[in-house]
Amino acid sequence: MTKLGAETHQREAVARRALFEYSMLYMKYAAVLILVFGVLGFIAFRSWGISAYVGGLTKSLSEQSPHSKRTEDVVLSVKNPIGSALVLHGLNFDAEGMKPIARLLQNAGFNVLAPRLVGHKADPESVFSLQREAWNEQIKFWSTGLMKPLICVGYSLGGLLLLERHISQDIHCDYFLGFSPALSVHIPTWAVDTVRAVWPSRILVPSGIPFKYRHFDFIGLMPTFSTFDILSEFGKELSVKKVVPLKGVIFIDPRDLVVNSKGVKELTQTYFPNFKLIEIQALPLDERHAYHMLIDEEHVGVSQWTRMAELVREDLERLGRSRL
Image (cartoon, rainbow, N blue to C red; front, side, top):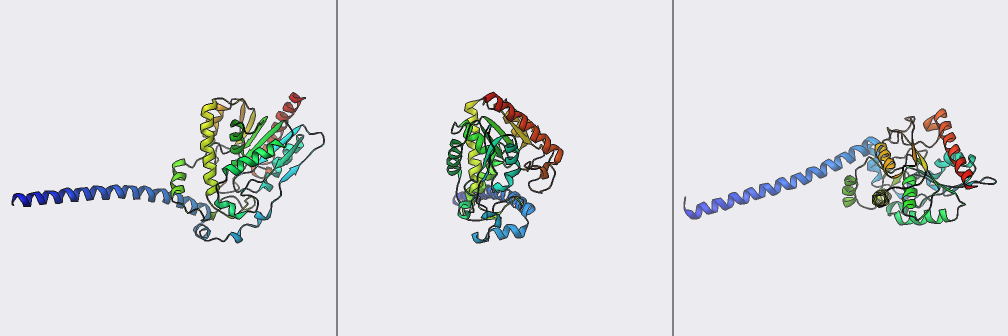
């Protein structure tokens, strides 16, 4: 073989090797993407069924759940109130589902407002929008007009929103009551960021909320992305605050499939030393939200709901006496 032929052969070998290495690199990236979407697809199919998931890709906004026609806030009042309670629902959760908690607080002597967040007012276009700023403005407006002391009560997303607004000093809570608050979740941030980078903003997916409690049957993912933005900001604010002196109670089931109960426990022990964490054994009534919906007697049983009500009433009576 001539010197020129040997050099040509060597260049071709180097080129083949480079092509092979680039191909392997792209295959690795492709494998990661396939794995991510495969896991997300499996979760979606297992939770909602293949037909429901595919149907959500083309679902018309006019075909939304009849629950979306509910637009009134829940307002309960008492004579000679001790104070007020602001009660916030979870993501795509109908505010009507918060009535048992609202009545519990009314019975403890508080005026109660359980309003509807943007995206939960029969406004289907809102499911395609990021809601963080709108939610913040609503919470500030509601809290400003309520009698003190103010009890901040949140289920799932609602708990996260109220605590984040409190530590940001946008509102002031005198007491916090959380029902499975989404202060830590099982879904990793990197998975959400990956989906967010490629997800078409106007595609609808089936809601995982049990039918009786959901607001829309099909939702966009923008409000979910907003939730993770708030969760990220919440963590940053806590790292600066170090310790938050707010008193309160959190009810949570260690088996919660939505909220990471271990993460919530670690967070409260580190930053909220005056919080009491009460473990509740929920009844597994709703497959995807099993052990998460600690919101009424139906989901926790008569004895546990009575225990929860008594604990809340005792704490709030002490708060009321301290304010006299």
